[in-house]
Image (cartoon, rainbow over all chains, first blue to last red; front, side, top):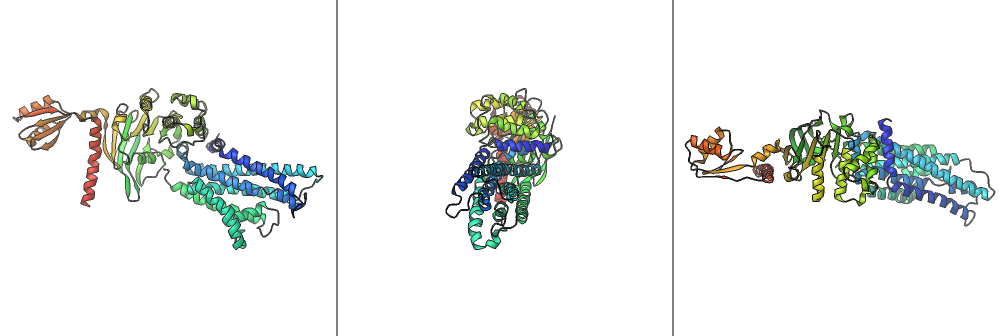
Length: 250
Length: 305
């Protein structure tokens, strides 16, 4: 096995030997399945779209926010945690190549984000199909494939953004609080109200273009949204690589 | 066997000069103590050697190569810098398995080194519940994983109880450490005096002494001589190859010499000796003399500036 593959396996071992990953994955899965069941229960009531309509199915499949936030946190913990717990020291002693360690960490988190979000979406989609078939509905909207792909891309990108933020700040708690505050409050609440034309070009706005129903509101198209979000991930990763390569490890 | 070399190594953090033009070699196959008070630059020097910090200038190499250039670092160098480089949520075995997975070392090495450091019984326990001594042992286990020729330990005795100190001393003198190049830092000479062959003393980032422990021990033997003409006696003893220090007009201190040699040299020169007494220092006093000499020089420079 070559050195890069060994490093990737070690990175996965790090992730799976702490509590953060199983706990956050379990929470995401419960939220995904639970939200489908709740959406099905309230369908057609209080102005909600009737069960089985395109709007109802898309609403039930909005998992992108949950999987993206989970991967953002895991990315921050994977990179920032190395500095918080100073496990970066044995990591660099075993593999004295900062560039390779960083690149492998980014690739592993992106891959994990894609696999995890695909699994959650698949599980949610299966629950939706069961729920609908129980009510005699046997068709799904055509845009589900695009939504599936968008959720996977958004989760992978947010995982990479998390790695970049963790490496830049080296402070897991601070980075998580700042990132969640930005994504769920500053961007989604304040900027969305004040400057909706700008908000859709920002990371959470771009992710919305990927993970919401096709043609949702004033969002970017999935192709543009994917490009914009990938661009943010790349810019932040380049900044993180620059500081990671230069800084002394205390 | 491997040699560690430092050549004109300097590290500056803004206005602070942490390591000042340091040049010395750590000889292969010997246990070398790297001594100096806290803040003297030992850890910074080791971090530069291990590629964790970049030098401002100069080089730090192992067998002529920077750490990141070593073809198989984990099998060539084992380093334990401190016990706070462990994730509290991982078990002892998991911590070591991450290293063996990343480096391709055989899995059986995890059990072997855990047995070697006496942690087999707690291999599955989370590190967060470990005592400082257990964490130190686990750090050392990580250093021993690759069965390397070079071992580098930074203050391995820090915070340990007497049992832990005895254990680490035993490890450094054990067959598993023999025939390796061992470089171990400490802020107290007495901590490592039982285990080291060579001694390197650092103060304020500067090299103050590089010697063998036996030579350093010889330096602690001091003979105080009172005579009516101390300066002349000092000249006579120096001419006889004896290391002397003129204390005042009537007193000379001689090191590394016997009372017989001093008496005979004085008699040959026709000098009267009023008193001749042995006043041995302990090793720690000599160490502090070496360290404080530089600190006094530094203070004098500051006053002059």
